[in-house]
Amino acid sequence: AQSVTQPDIHITVSEGASLELRCNYSYGATPYLFWYVQSPGQGLQLLLKYFSGDTLVQGIKGFEAEFKRSQTSINLRKPTVHWSDAAEYFCAVGAPNFNKFYFGSGTKLNVKP
Amino acid sequence: DAGVIQSPRHEVTEMGQEVTLRCKPISGHNSLFWYRQTMMRGLELLIYFNNNVPIDDSGMPEDRFSAKMPNASFSTLKIQPSEPRDSAVYFCASSLVQNTDTQYFGPGTRLTVL
Image (cartoon, rainbow over all chains, first blue to last red):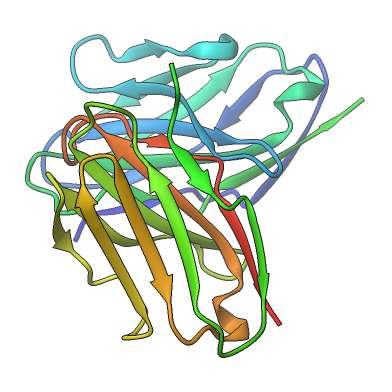
């Protein structure tokens, strides 16, 4: 069965530090992968998506993600975290033969001053 | 460009009352999704439509929930009768293509059932 796992429920980093949020998926081929961010009281906003091609994907707000087929992962990274990045981050997977779009359980990011 | 529009943004009602949530997808999008988000269960897909036709409603919790999409620019999610455990944030999202394209989310409706 298709699934998405975000192993970290909460992460705290200091402002100015680097960030990596983990996401693993389960699927027999290369799926379409997405990272969304949800600020408190807001809807989900797309940060980036991976469909094919270059395994390093650039997104908005300085985020990037690297797709690793052998590890069935697409981890989200940011070199320098800002206080405004505090939010919840969701990884999601879709594919042509999926009936549904699967979301992970989310990772809440806290940024220390 | 107008994004996905949801109304109301907040709804407080009493147990047993009917609740109707509304969604206007992005113009030109063919697929529409209803999600529910709670602390306990996270983000759950309730139902989705493709070209106004319900494709998969297996996520709808029970018969008290129903959803319609009478045309390409409007959808409703109805709960009748409502119960306190239905309290959650309900999101509507739309996309151009069913499950291979970016889903664009509305701001959500925060429902509180007393």
